[in-house]
Length: 283
Image 1 (cartoon, rainbow, N blue to C red):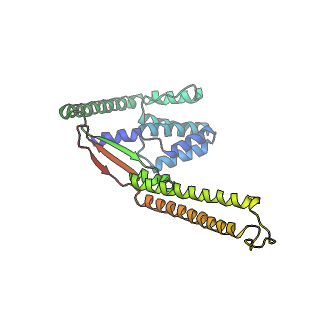
Image 2 (cartoon, helix red, strand yellow):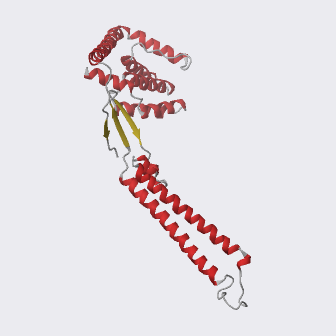
Image 3 (cartoon, one colour):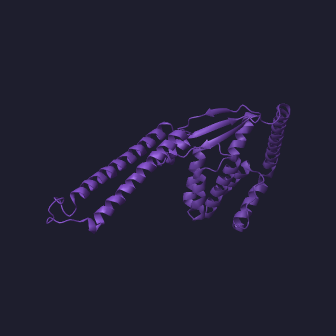
Protein backbone atom coordinates (compact mmCIF):
# COMPACT_ATOMS: atom_id res chain seq x y z
CA UNK A 1 0.00 0.00 0.00
CA UNK A 2 2.83 2.44 0.85
CA UNK A 3 4.56 1.83 -2.47
CA UNK A 4 1.25 2.35 -4.26
CA UNK A 5 0.68 5.70 -2.52
CA UNK A 6 4.22 6.78 -3.41
CA UNK A 7 3.61 5.85 -7.02
CA UNK A 8 0.36 7.83 -7.08
CA UNK A 9 2.09 10.83 -5.51
CA UNK A 10 4.87 10.74 -8.10
CA UNK A 11 2.40 10.43 -10.96
CA UNK A 12 0.43 13.43 -9.67
CA UNK A 13 3.52 15.63 -9.27
CA UNK A 14 4.30 18.23 -11.93
CA UNK A 15 7.05 17.43 -14.45
CA UNK A 16 10.61 18.36 -13.43
CA UNK A 17 11.75 21.85 -14.37
CA UNK A 18 14.67 20.35 -16.33
CA UNK A 19 12.21 18.43 -18.51
CA UNK A 20 10.32 21.62 -19.27
CA UNK A 21 13.55 23.39 -20.20
CA UNK A 22 14.48 20.51 -22.49
CA UNK A 23 11.07 20.71 -24.17
CA UNK A 24 11.47 24.47 -24.65
CA UNK A 25 14.87 23.98 -26.29
CA UNK A 26 13.42 21.35 -28.61
CA UNK A 27 10.58 23.66 -29.66
CA UNK A 28 13.15 26.35 -30.50
CA UNK A 29 15.07 23.89 -32.66
CA UNK A 30 18.08 23.63 -30.31
CA UNK A 31 18.22 19.83 -30.67
CA UNK A 32 21.76 19.36 -29.36
CA UNK A 33 20.97 21.37 -26.23
CA UNK A 34 17.73 19.46 -25.77
CA UNK A 35 19.49 16.09 -26.00
CA UNK A 36 22.15 17.23 -23.53
CA UNK A 37 19.54 18.50 -21.08
CA UNK A 38 17.60 15.22 -21.26
CA UNK A 39 20.71 13.10 -20.66
CA UNK A 40 21.67 15.29 -17.71
CA UNK A 41 18.16 14.91 -16.28
CA UNK A 42 18.16 11.13 -16.69
CA UNK A 43 21.56 10.86 -15.04
CA UNK A 44 20.54 13.02 -12.09
CA UNK A 45 17.01 11.61 -11.66
CA UNK A 46 16.94 7.99 -12.84
CA UNK A 47 13.70 7.26 -10.93
CA UNK A 48 11.37 9.41 -13.01
CA UNK A 49 7.72 8.49 -13.31
CA UNK A 50 6.77 6.52 -16.41
CA UNK A 51 5.05 9.56 -17.93
CA UNK A 52 8.04 11.88 -17.38
CA UNK A 53 10.52 9.23 -18.52
CA UNK A 54 8.50 8.58 -21.69
CA UNK A 55 8.43 12.32 -22.43
CA UNK A 56 12.17 12.62 -21.79
CA UNK A 57 13.07 9.70 -24.09
CA UNK A 58 10.69 11.00 -26.76
CA UNK A 59 12.48 14.36 -26.76
CA UNK A 60 15.82 12.59 -26.84
CA UNK A 61 14.79 10.35 -29.74
CA UNK A 62 13.36 13.20 -31.79
CA UNK A 63 16.41 15.38 -31.12
CA UNK A 64 18.86 12.63 -32.11
CA UNK A 65 16.91 11.98 -35.30
CA UNK A 66 17.03 15.65 -36.23
CA UNK A 67 20.77 15.61 -35.48
CA UNK A 68 21.19 12.71 -37.91
CA UNK A 69 21.98 9.98 -35.38
CA UNK A 70 19.37 7.29 -36.13
CA UNK A 71 21.07 4.72 -33.86
CA UNK A 72 20.74 6.96 -30.81
CA UNK A 73 17.18 7.81 -31.85
CA UNK A 74 16.29 4.07 -32.01
CA UNK A 75 17.87 3.51 -28.59
CA UNK A 76 15.84 6.39 -27.10
CA UNK A 77 12.63 5.02 -28.63
CA UNK A 78 13.30 1.58 -27.13
CA UNK A 79 13.75 3.20 -23.71
CA UNK A 80 10.51 5.12 -24.24
CA UNK A 81 8.61 1.90 -25.01
CA UNK A 82 10.06 0.27 -21.90
CA UNK A 83 8.15 2.84 -19.87
CA UNK A 84 5.03 2.93 -22.04
CA UNK A 85 4.67 -0.03 -24.43
CA UNK A 86 1.54 1.48 -26.00
CA UNK A 87 3.03 4.90 -26.70
CA UNK A 88 2.09 6.43 -30.07
CA UNK A 89 3.71 9.43 -31.72
CA UNK A 90 1.26 12.05 -32.91
CA UNK A 91 1.58 12.29 -36.71
CA UNK A 92 0.20 15.85 -36.62
CA UNK A 93 3.30 17.07 -34.73
CA UNK A 94 5.97 14.52 -35.63
CA UNK A 95 7.30 14.20 -39.21
CA UNK A 96 6.24 10.98 -40.99
CA UNK A 97 9.81 9.55 -41.30
CA UNK A 98 10.22 9.68 -37.52
CA UNK A 99 6.80 8.10 -36.98
CA UNK A 100 7.75 5.31 -39.39
CA UNK A 101 11.01 4.69 -37.54
CA UNK A 102 9.21 4.60 -34.19
CA UNK A 103 6.55 2.19 -35.46
CA UNK A 104 9.28 -0.01 -36.92
CA UNK A 105 11.11 -0.10 -33.55
CA UNK A 106 7.86 -1.01 -31.78
CA UNK A 107 7.14 -3.81 -34.28
CA UNK A 108 10.65 -5.25 -33.98
CA UNK A 109 10.37 -5.45 -30.17
CA UNK A 110 6.74 -6.57 -29.97
CA UNK A 111 7.74 -9.93 -28.50
CA UNK A 112 9.41 -8.18 -25.57
CA UNK A 113 6.76 -5.49 -25.23
CA UNK A 114 3.82 -7.93 -24.90
CA UNK A 115 4.74 -9.28 -21.43
CA UNK A 116 5.73 -5.78 -20.30
CA UNK A 117 2.35 -4.47 -21.46
CA UNK A 118 0.59 -7.26 -19.55
CA UNK A 119 2.60 -6.53 -16.40
CA UNK A 120 1.65 -2.85 -16.52
CA UNK A 121 -1.99 -3.81 -17.03
CA UNK A 122 -1.80 -5.95 -13.89
CA UNK A 123 -0.24 -3.07 -11.95
CA UNK A 124 -3.00 -0.72 -13.05
CA UNK A 125 -5.58 -3.28 -11.96
CA UNK A 126 -3.89 -3.59 -8.58
CA UNK A 127 -3.93 0.18 -8.21
CA UNK A 128 -7.63 0.24 -9.06
CA UNK A 129 -8.42 -2.49 -6.53
CA UNK A 130 -6.35 -0.73 -3.86
CA UNK A 131 -8.21 2.53 -4.50
CA UNK A 132 -11.55 0.76 -4.24
CA UNK A 133 -10.47 -0.87 -0.97
CA UNK A 134 -9.43 2.51 0.41
CA UNK A 135 -12.73 4.12 -0.49
CA UNK A 136 -14.66 1.18 0.98
CA UNK A 137 -12.69 1.42 4.23
CA UNK A 138 -13.40 5.14 4.57
CA UNK A 139 -17.07 4.69 3.68
CA UNK A 140 -17.51 1.95 6.29
CA UNK A 141 -15.80 4.06 8.95
CA UNK A 142 -17.97 7.07 8.15
CA UNK A 143 -21.10 4.91 8.24
CA UNK A 144 -20.07 3.60 11.66
CA UNK A 145 -19.11 6.93 13.25
CA UNK A 146 -21.51 9.19 11.35
CA UNK A 147 -20.66 12.56 9.82
CA UNK A 148 -17.91 14.67 11.42
CA UNK A 149 -19.10 16.21 14.68
CA UNK A 150 -16.65 19.11 14.55
CA UNK A 151 -15.87 21.75 12.02
CA UNK A 152 -12.58 23.63 11.87
CA UNK A 153 -12.88 27.25 10.78
CA UNK A 154 -9.54 28.64 9.59
CA UNK A 155 -8.91 32.38 9.58
CA UNK A 156 -5.82 33.71 7.83
CA UNK A 157 -4.89 37.10 9.29
CA UNK A 158 -3.35 39.88 7.21
CA UNK A 159 0.02 41.18 8.38
CA UNK A 160 -0.53 44.59 6.75
CA UNK A 161 -3.31 45.33 9.25
CA UNK A 162 -0.66 45.65 11.98
CA UNK A 163 0.48 48.91 10.34
CA UNK A 164 -2.94 50.45 9.77
CA UNK A 165 -4.31 53.19 12.08
CA UNK A 166 -7.63 53.27 13.95
CA UNK A 167 -6.91 50.04 15.85
CA UNK A 168 -7.14 47.80 12.76
CA UNK A 169 -4.48 45.44 14.15
CA UNK A 170 -6.27 45.17 17.52
CA UNK A 171 -9.65 44.46 15.91
CA UNK A 172 -8.02 41.74 13.77
CA UNK A 173 -6.39 40.22 16.86
CA UNK A 174 -9.78 40.05 18.57
CA UNK A 175 -9.16 42.85 21.11
CA UNK A 176 -12.12 45.08 20.31
CA UNK A 177 -11.98 47.22 23.46
CA UNK A 178 -8.35 48.17 22.90
CA UNK A 179 -9.00 48.75 19.21
CA UNK A 180 -11.93 51.03 20.04
CA UNK A 181 -9.81 53.03 22.52
CA UNK A 182 -6.98 53.45 20.00
CA UNK A 183 -9.38 54.42 17.21
CA UNK A 184 -11.16 56.95 19.46
CA UNK A 185 -7.88 58.46 20.61
CA UNK A 186 -6.58 58.84 17.06
CA UNK A 187 -9.87 60.33 15.84
CA UNK A 188 -10.02 62.83 18.71
CA UNK A 189 -6.38 63.88 18.34
CA UNK A 190 -6.80 64.12 14.58
CA UNK A 191 -9.88 66.33 14.89
CA UNK A 192 -8.20 68.52 17.49
CA UNK A 193 -5.14 68.90 15.26
CA UNK A 194 -7.24 69.79 12.21
CA UNK A 195 -9.33 72.23 14.25
CA UNK A 196 -6.20 73.91 15.61
CA UNK A 197 -4.77 74.28 12.12
CA UNK A 198 -7.98 75.78 10.75
CA UNK A 199 -8.35 78.14 13.72
CA UNK A 200 -4.72 79.26 13.41
CA UNK A 201 -5.13 79.94 9.70
CA UNK A 202 -8.37 81.82 10.27
CA UNK A 203 -6.73 84.23 12.72
CA UNK A 204 -3.55 84.58 10.69
CA UNK A 205 -5.45 85.40 7.48
CA UNK A 206 -7.95 87.80 9.03
CA UNK A 207 -6.68 91.25 7.97
CA UNK A 208 -9.16 92.98 10.23
CA UNK A 209 -7.19 91.68 13.23
CA UNK A 210 -3.92 93.19 12.03
CA UNK A 211 -2.26 96.03 13.98
CA UNK A 212 0.53 98.54 13.38
CA UNK A 213 3.33 99.92 15.58
CA UNK A 214 1.58 103.28 15.59
CA UNK A 215 -1.04 101.96 17.95
CA UNK A 216 -0.44 103.18 21.50
CA UNK A 217 -0.80 99.77 23.20
CA UNK A 218 -1.31 96.08 22.45
CA UNK A 219 0.85 95.80 19.33
CA UNK A 220 4.37 95.11 20.50
CA UNK A 221 4.87 92.40 17.81
CA UNK A 222 3.04 93.47 14.63
CA UNK A 223 1.26 92.56 12.46
CA UNK A 224 -0.78 90.75 15.18
CA UNK A 225 -2.00 92.23 18.41
CA UNK A 226 -0.49 90.96 21.61
CA UNK A 227 -3.75 89.16 22.46
CA UNK A 228 -3.89 87.43 19.06
CA UNK A 229 -0.19 86.60 19.32
CA UNK A 230 -0.82 84.78 22.61
CA UNK A 231 -3.83 83.05 21.08
CA UNK A 232 -1.77 81.90 18.07
CA UNK A 233 0.98 80.58 20.34
CA UNK A 234 -1.54 78.58 22.34
CA UNK A 235 -3.11 77.28 19.12
CA UNK A 236 0.32 76.18 17.89
CA UNK A 237 0.91 74.37 21.17
CA UNK A 238 -2.40 72.54 20.80
CA UNK A 239 -1.62 71.76 17.17
CA UNK A 240 1.80 70.23 17.88
CA UNK A 241 0.69 68.45 21.04
CA UNK A 242 -2.30 66.85 19.31
CA UNK A 243 -0.09 65.73 16.41
CA UNK A 244 2.45 64.25 18.82
CA UNK A 245 -0.28 62.41 20.74
CA UNK A 246 -1.80 61.11 17.50
CA UNK A 247 1.50 59.58 16.36
CA UNK A 248 2.21 58.27 19.86
CA UNK A 249 -1.14 56.45 19.90
CA UNK A 250 -0.50 55.16 16.37
CA UNK A 251 2.97 53.86 17.35
CA UNK A 252 1.51 52.15 20.42
CA UNK A 253 -1.15 50.50 18.24
CA UNK A 254 1.44 49.22 15.78
CA UNK A 255 3.69 47.78 18.50
CA UNK A 256 0.77 46.20 20.36
CA UNK A 257 -0.64 44.71 17.14
CA UNK A 258 2.73 43.09 16.33
CA UNK A 259 3.15 41.71 19.83
CA UNK A 260 -0.28 40.05 19.76
CA UNK A 261 -0.30 39.08 16.06
CA UNK A 262 -1.25 35.46 15.26
CA UNK A 263 -0.98 34.72 11.51
CA UNK A 264 -3.44 31.83 11.52
CA UNK A 265 -6.36 31.08 13.83
CA UNK A 266 -8.22 27.78 13.81
CA UNK A 267 -11.57 27.69 15.57
CA UNK A 268 -12.94 24.26 16.40
CA UNK A 269 -16.73 24.35 16.27
CA UNK A 270 -18.94 21.60 17.69
CA UNK A 271 -22.41 21.81 16.07
CA UNK A 272 -24.05 20.10 19.07
CA UNK A 273 -22.86 22.94 21.31
CA UNK A 274 -19.91 23.55 23.54
CA UNK A 275 -17.50 24.75 20.88
CA UNK A 276 -13.85 24.98 21.80
CA UNK A 277 -11.35 27.57 20.64
CA UNK A 278 -7.95 26.46 19.48
CA UNK A 279 -5.19 28.85 18.39
CA UNK A 280 -2.14 27.82 16.43
CA UNK A 281 0.95 29.91 15.78
CA UNK A 282 2.67 29.61 12.37
CA UNK A 283 5.57 31.94 11.59
